[in-house]
Amino acid sequence: MSSLPPEQKPVGKSRIFITGSADGLGLAAAKALLDEGHGVVVHVRSQARLSAVAPLLAQGAVAVVGDLANLDEVRDIARQVNAIGPMDAIIHNAGVLSGDAVLVVNVVAPYLLTALLPKPKRLVYLSSSMHRSGTADLATMDWSGQTSTGSYSDSKLFVTALTVAVARLWPGVWVNAVDPGWVPTKMGGASAPDDLRLGHVTQAWLATTDEPRALTSGGYWHHQEREEPHPAVYEIPFQNELVTTLARVTGTVLPE
Image (cartoon, rainbow, N blue to C red; front, side, top):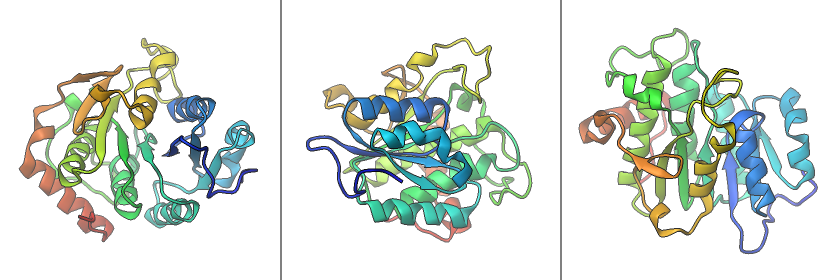
């Protein structure tokens, strides 16, 4: 799906995989990273969505296809990415705001991809300031996507805790969460007050920069500055319960 052989990447640059790249912040991050000369692997939900990334493919990106709400397709996405080659960085950008698939897309799929793909040098997960309204209670969640049990805020609390858990368990990887702000994307809505131009900057920066302040792990970032997340994010028993639960529902254990 690209004019370049998938195993190639620009000399001295990174190869970065970005989920949810067909629009919004994922598309903006992919474009910015391509403009900087990096090799980019974009992701779209279906073959019909490939047209949305056609300009990126013309610029040298490679595309993978699969629905993050379907765990069989998530596993196939991992197979497609692994066939391209190891990634230097992965940005777990994709997310949904509501519906039965909130937990699957926002939490389960990022966990499963993390478990199935070789460890990159850097991992970035998209959080939200709304995670501070989430509830650190896993017992009542339906992780199958069959019923709507978790809110968007819950899902972003969980994925932020997952970020810090992976940072603790994988000390050789820079792992961080990003609050991109409430920006006027399809998800954020046209009346969102934050600057769309800044929405993708921090995740792209964390995926590639050598600035010492970014070469840290377990952080929660907003506009290139670290902030304090919900206190539960740093609670190791909660992290362990979350990772154990996700391993159970996916049948896939996070590698050591």
